[in-house]
Structures are given as structure tokens and as C-alpha cells.
Image (cartoon, rainbow, N blue to C red; front, side):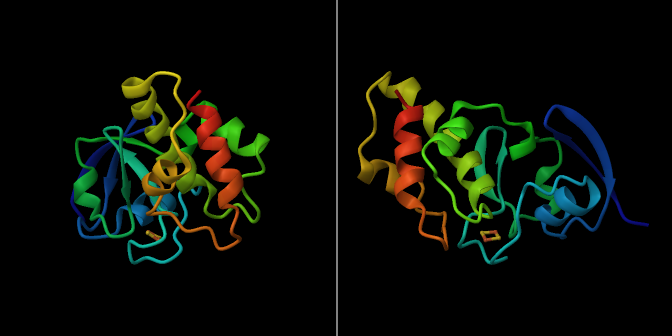
Length: 153
Ligand code: FES
């Protein structure tokens, strides 16, 4: 039988029997039913599958399930962060498929930024650089960047 991996997701511990080489995104979506994390490119380039591992955003499509063992995973379902309202308020989405990835990455960026800079908003270039690993096919970047700037102040 498949080995069992212990994972804590959004504060809840799970034991999942799975191939340790299976993509983490599949375990999160298919075994745990947390479908907020999206699988789009499957190649580590679009950011839709981003989750936080011990607070650090990582693409989960190229991450083996074994890498989740013993870690604290946060998915978009487990986030309650000002960046979420900010994205809605600034129309930072169109189809919404990339949104969870931007939210998961953006929340970590905002928290880190605020810890280092207080209420000073990052520049557009700084935000774009921080979110460079995320693609929005609808081109809603203006709203997304405005939302991140707003959430930082
Ligand atoms: Fe993982 Fe695109 S689905 S980076």
C-alpha cells in the first residue's frame, strides 16, 4: 500500500496515503478536497497552484507530496487576510482562476513588506517583481497591483 504522509493543512492534521512523488497540488485538491488551489500549467510557471509551506509561498505542481510531510500548509481556504478584500475592492480579477495564487503569494508579500517597511506602500515595480511568478491571462494586473499596494498601507 501507499505510504502515509502526515500533513497539517490550515491548522488541521491529516494522514494521507499517497505516492510520495505525486504532485502536492493533487493531494491538496483530490485527497483533501481543497480545490481553491488551482492546477493550470503544471510546469511551475503560472503560480496558480501556490500554497504556503511554513508561511513561504511555493508552487505545488512540481512539489512532491513528500515535501509536505511535517510542514504547516496554508491554502487560500485557510487565509483570512486583508489582501482578499483588497483584490475584490480593486477589481483585481476577471475570470478569477489565477486569484488564489495571487492571494496566497500576495498575503505573504504584504506581511513581509509591512514587517520591514511599516505603512509605506511598495512601488509598482516592487509589487510586480514580488508577483513575477504569477500569470493572469485576463491581464487584470493593474487591479491586482493596486490591491497589493492598498493592503500594504
Ligand atoms: Fe503550478 Fe502553474 S500550475 S505553476
